[in-house]
Length: 408
Image 1 (tube, rainbow, N blue to C red):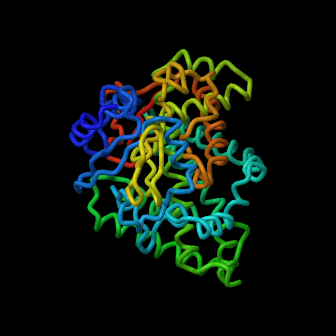
Image 2 (cartoon, rainbow, N blue to C red):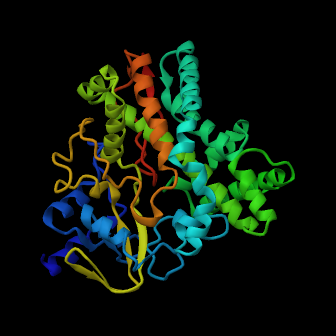
């Protein structure tokens, strides 16, 4: 690698990198070009002039995310803050911005809810919700917006059930979530959205303490009463789980549907198969192919750390580009192709290491129910507008589409 060339090239590009709107399913071409040229660990510039490291290689990403020399604590001076959600201030994103042992202590309080056994027990209920939403969709007018009528309600209903949040208040948390992930929102608006979610969940937590139910927020309330958990930490965990539990899966449902419609041969494979293994493979491949975490995973290295052939000095920030790692041709042959039979269980769409996504069993199960049910019950499913008219979320930290007009 030519260090001088690397510095010149990387500083001409500002993170977050820009996608090619003609190829809406592909990662930003500048990141793919870095990967292909061997600059799998190289500096990138942020809008504020700082220059953390961007990782685009798969093995390098796993190495960094599993290293004991990395910190998720956003209070480190070198932490590559690019968005308000990268900071832990007031109502924030709980343990995902903490290090062990506090990260592990808080995470364990929610782990039992998201075990594979507990999530599989929810599958019949999720299937019933999916069928009900499709019934309502079919009974309504065409064209319809799949985001509003299906992709957003489904994970919202499910995570509300798990947490004990009244679904009839969904518009409040969905509105604030959209503000948090929109890059164009002002810092003041995003902070206000965090605070509003915090106030709402703080009030709900108090109600759960007084009148507990069989839900995760009630469990957290019991821990508060027992002195195991501070109220503020319980509220932050509620924000994290409510936000992540509906926003990411909703985007994945809608974006995955567009990808399948644009790959009719792959869609037909899924529609015609009764094999649960193919359904599982299809979900993993869509997760790999789309990689909706748009702004990478942020870390600070706490000691000099070798990643690939580069030594990252202690105290410097790192951004792990999951969308690039999941398109690494050294790990995924024909990485730019969507192949539902690939079964890439080793993808890093949910991250890697101790901070990998707590809710991944729930997301996987929901997607395994959604895709085959949707395309079988609506065999003539199609876009109601040309692909070029679909508004992709190029301005959000979680990628997806704003609306998805469909006919059937």
